[in-house]
Image 1 (tube, rainbow, N blue to C red):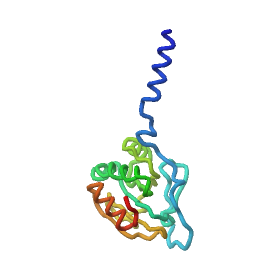
Image 2: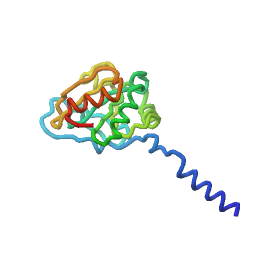
Image 3: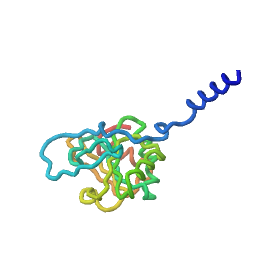
Image 4: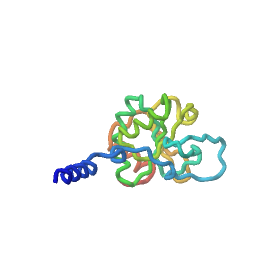
Length: 173
């Protein structure tokens, strides 16, 4: 009887304890929409899952690209806003983690903050020529991969981000 109780309690704890996926996980970048065509430069970034690579210039939308670093206080502030946006399942998001000490620091941040969208890893700072040297920065790309809006600095509210998604990507939230 005591063994049965322990088994039942252990099973309940297994199902009631938050998993790494519930808190966030490092997801595959296979969901990132990419297109072919003539691309002037080819910036190949590793996925934070370290299993694939994506050409930055090939990303197609509509998509919100959030460039961040785990070490950046404003980036940490805005992540919950992006988590809420992604939870609507109406908008694709791609993250680009920059200037990390190593890939594991980025992975730890993703899991801790509950980020469940694809994250690219810029180990060498090659995206600075595209996005600029500071973070956070958020780009909005249309279906053809053209930048239709660039938000430099902290996204301060859900209403602000939702309004930008609606205005620049045409997606009603």
